[in-house]
Image (cartoon, rainbow, N blue to C red; front, side, top):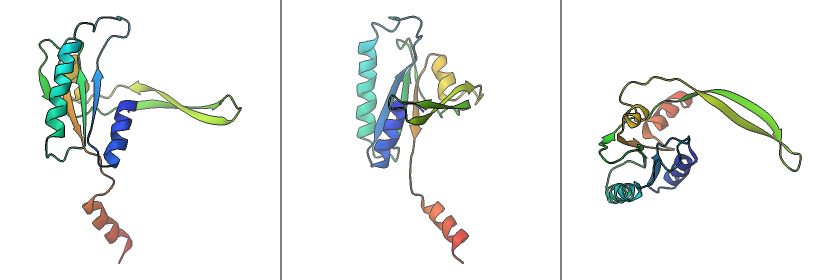
Length: 149
């Protein structure tokens, strides 16, 4: 999970709607995204106004822009499930205290053609709704059945 989405998760836990915006860019081609800022700014304003003024139960939106937004379609998509080959590394901070660094390489997880990553690589703007809840009435009943006779 990105730091941007992590901040959205935290906001959601406090009852605040949040949007994570991201841009799919080639890190090896700096400047390739230049000149598209105004178009993206317009899209961001559109998404913010629609989302914040809606009465939907959606807590979080993850919105990603392709490199070229000129003729991009807006598609609501499901999130991509990502798995990582995890490596836990023991390190020391500047004060010689030990800590653990979680690292890993993503594994290929094919989710089909309708996940956000696949649609984004095809040049679409993806809007992925995410609902985060720390309480669920159904889970409360299941816990009662499990622990109370």
